[in-house]
Length: 397
Ligand SMILES: *Cc1c(COP(=O)(O)O)cnc(C)c1O
Image (cartoon, rainbow, N blue to C red; front, top):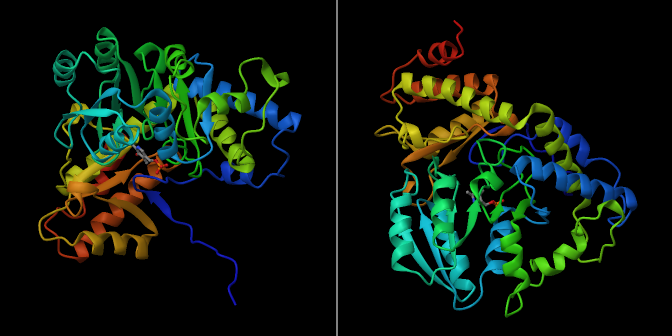
C-alpha cells in the first residue's frame, strides 16, 4: 500500500530550488477559491504591482506565467520572434544555449556570440555582432548564469542593442530578488524569471515583464504565435489590461491558484524586507561564504568583479569524488549543494545562497559540513579554519 509522501527537511544550497520560507508554505495551504472570484482577481492585481516593484518597472504587462522559468523563457521568444527573424544570442553558459534552441524552433536565425564559461558576456563582442548583422531584430542574453555563477552588465548590453535598433530579451531567473536588477532604467524589453531561486517560493511559476516597445511588436505580428498557451495576446485578456480589479477578464486557463498565493506571499516578504536590503543581504552572506571556502583553499571559477553572490561556483579539488562529497553532505547534514552543469560537470560545485536560504546559519553549516566531509575523505584542503574565516567576515570571532 502506498502511503503519503513525507520529504525530509533539507537545507537547499544548490542552484535552485532554494529553501522555501515557512510563511510561503503556509500561504500555499490557504483555501482554494475560484480563479474568477472577485477576491482572487483583486489578489492578481496586487501581484502585478508587487512584481513591478521586484522588477523595478512600470511595465503594465508584468505577470507570472503559469509554468516554470523555462516557460517564461519560451513566452518571451515565441511572442517576439517570427520565422525569418535574426536574433543575436550572447552565450556564456548553459542557459544561453537554451535561448539558441528557442530562436531556432521559432524558425529564426540565431547569431551566436560566445564568451568563455565562467565570465560575463562581453559588450564589445555584442557590438561587433550588431555591426556585422544589421538585420538583427533582437538581442538575448542571461543576466545571472546559474551554470557558472557569472553576472553580465545588463545596462551596457541593452544600451548597445538599442543603438542598433534591437529589442532585448533577458533571463533573470536567478537574479530577481538576489542582485541589482532595474528593468526600466536598464532598458530591458522582455524579461523572465522564476519563483524558486532568490524569491524562495516553490517552483512552477515564471514572472515576466514586457516593455511598451515589446508589446507593439507582439500586437503587430504578421503570423500567429505558434504556442496557443503562451500567446500573450490571449494571456493579456486573462490577466487583464490595467483597469484594476473591476476589469473584465476572459477565461484562458485556470490559474494555479494556491501557487499564486505562495508567490504573492514571497513578494510581500520581498517588499517588507526592501529590494535593496535583499540585494545587500545576498552580498553579505556571499562574502562570508567566500571567506570560508577560500580559507579552505577552494577557488572560485568566476573573476571577482563578475561573481554572483547567490551562485558560488568553486573548483572541486584534485582527486576528490564529486558525487561522494555531495552524497555525504546530503546524508549527514541534509545539505544539498549543486553539481556542475554542461562542460563543468564533475569539475565544480555550485553553492547557492538564494532567498530564504541566504542566511548566516546556512553559511556556517555549509563550511562546517564541507570541512568535515572533505577532511574525512582526505582531500587536499586546509582543515579547521573555514568557520573562523566566515565568522571574521561577519566581524565576529
Ligand atoms: C533555473 C533557470 C532556468 C530555468 O528555470 P526552470 O524553472 O527550471 O524552468 C532558466 N534560466 C536560468 C538562468 C536558470 O537559473
